[in-house]
Structure formats: structure tokens, C-alpha cells
Amino acid sequence: MHTRELDRRSLLILDELVATATPADLDLPTPCAGWTLADLLRHQVGENNGFAIAVRHGSAPDWDGDLGDHAYRAYAASVDAYLAAFADDAVLDRTLTIGGLGDYPGHIAARMHLIDTVVHGWDLAKTLGRPYEPLPEAVRDALEFAERIPADPEVRRQRGTFAPVVELAGDVPEFDRLLGLLGRSPGWERPN
Image 1 (cartoon, rainbow, N blue to C red):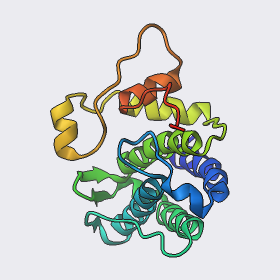
Image 2 (image 1 turned 180 degrees about the vertical axis):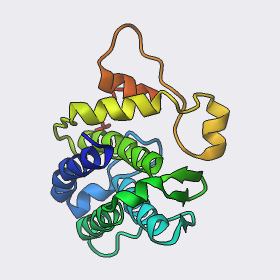
Image 3 (image 1 turned 135 degrees about the horizontal axis):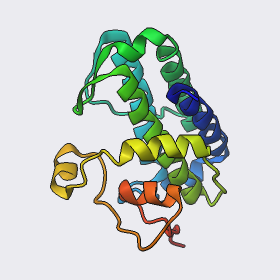
Image 4 (image 1 turned 30 degrees about the vertical axis):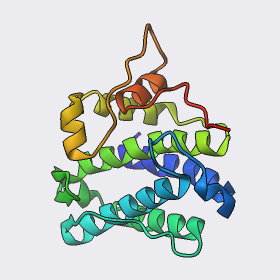
């Protein structure tokens, strides 16, 4: 299955999670250190809109997501914008400037987005205390790409992308490995 289709289906899973969030949930802590649920949703809205702007205009400056007065509506609108922008196959061969991250072919940008979709789905589920079952094909695609991301903590800090790699002992499931590569502890639980 193509990355864009995996991302679309993964976004549908996230949509169900975000739709359950109440205004009171927006202050909950997330697995993303220092971020509340509102911060995480702003990041996702900004990223979705930023990628869509990059497709339409070739580049997007650093973006900041605005939740307005209704977080779910802002999130859903950003997903629609992202999916519409990436619907044309020609996008996959175009060079896009993604925020402060650099220039990438569209097919790489789509994989970058898929990684965030899959992993932020886990962040959302953990924050909201909901189950999360990502698509196995999406996990494999994201993991293959995540294994290429520089692990040097200083590079990650300078780019502002991911937390340092969390080393996991032994043979762990693919999804746990993906979480560890992107700086998350698979055992994270929301503080009471």
C-alpha cells in the first residue's frame, strides 16, 4: 500500500481519537515532554497545514497551528487540507521546502508526515487513556524511514525534531522500536 494511503487511513484512526477529546482534556500532559494535549494538537494542525501550504506554494515557513475556539474542527480542517494537497501523484516528484527542516521530494515529505501521524496517534491515545492500534503496514513504513533519522542527540536538538533515542532492551515489537527511535518510552503512562 502506498505511503499516502497508509497516512490517510492512519489519519482516520487519529480522527476518532481527537473527536473524543473534551475542552478539559486540552490541559492534559502528553508523552511529548513539556507538551499538553493542546500543544500536541496545535503541532499537528500546524504541520498538516504547513505541508499543504508547501505543496501549493513550494515552501512553507515554520508554522504554528491555531486551534481557534474548537480544537476538533481545526484539526479536521487541517487533515482535509493536507489530504487534498497530497491527492495528486505529481506532488510526489516535486521538491517541497518543509518548515525549517529543508528541501525534500514530495514522496519523502509524505513519509515524514506518516511518521508523525503514526507516533502522534500513540501520543494522543496515551494522553486520553484510549486504546490505539496503528496499521501494521504504516508502522513498518514509518519504522523503515525512522531508522534513517540521525540518532545524534545534538543534531536532533539543533533541528528541533525528536527527543534522544530511547534504548530498548531485547527483541521488542516493531511499534515499540519505532517509539524508541523517536524518543518515546513505550511504557509511558499519564501522571495522575
